Length: 451
Image (cartoon, rainbow, N blue to C red; front, side, top):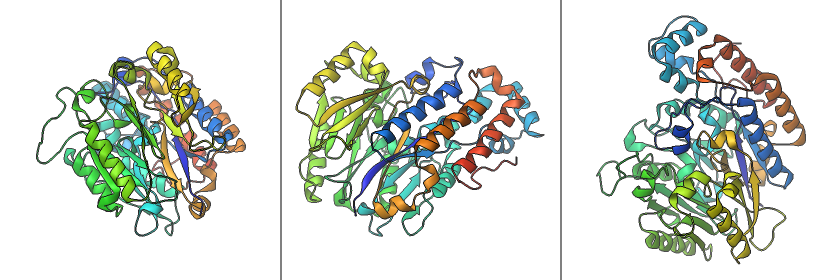
């Protein structure tokens, strides 16, 4: 059966705000407490999804989570009606309220790690939600993430859903943001590439000293075991701790891959030569042929330029209109606004590499909160039977696009500031929007509020 790679983008939720909650994420910290525009954020994401659909890509939509997370606030001792709980938290602990209002589930690259059925011994596609334990506002996501994934990929004959790993730094797991799959063609058994920031149990150096390493080797190894992956089809690599300290909080901020192409910064990995050797060896062992390594020199694009432009937080796509293994790269507008990055991209397209086309999107609302094109999407390789088994209401189409654009116009605010989080009306607005969304996307009861 013909397999292809689909992108399931996170729909930005109605409480999108700049809380500055993600320590180690430079953009998130720099834009803390600025007013956000939830409607614009959601519509920018939808325009990207629709554009890729129009190019012939299989494009899906993943629902946002219900915010504020009132259950968590009640577990922490706040009592009363929903509005009373929010007003109490706003008075006692505004930072906690911002965390429980975060719309960070929009970045579905962190939702889960995915292994295609062609890689797994039971012939099913495997999902493991990320525990995201390093940041409180994200650590409260994984239960609902699992429900949304199960509602989107519901057929147990084709899809296997695991629980998130134990919620401990020793098994800190940030999902597909630290995972890439390489292959000759999507339907072949591929090579799964896990990048980690630290050895959690033995403390093996070197480790970052300024910002935390969010992914542990032990977590990556556990996910590979859960999915039944063989040793010869898995490569583990340590991220360079110096780039973590420079603001590269996930591997997808400094490297991206697709097919047989690895596109990465010169300083991305602790031992690049060994990493590339191991990847090529695994590709050869699995009958996937030769890798193409595209290394971006530090003297052309610095780590700082990579972080501010999100050059590597891009999508490498095998676009239907491109032939002979050629690919397009989806980048944010910020890449063209950075002189060095823009010059590098011109040089890249003029070369004989596999990357032949640039697609530029305005994602400023997401970028200002620390997430680019790659953060917004979860990659899912699906064969024809699996494509037919996906919840069809979650697949982008002309009608779904127009319906969701109208839905955001109806329910989303144009401006949201930190002080607005204390407004009880925001709870009602959010619940009303998501209740309607469950009907649009045919999700059933994935939210626990009563409306």
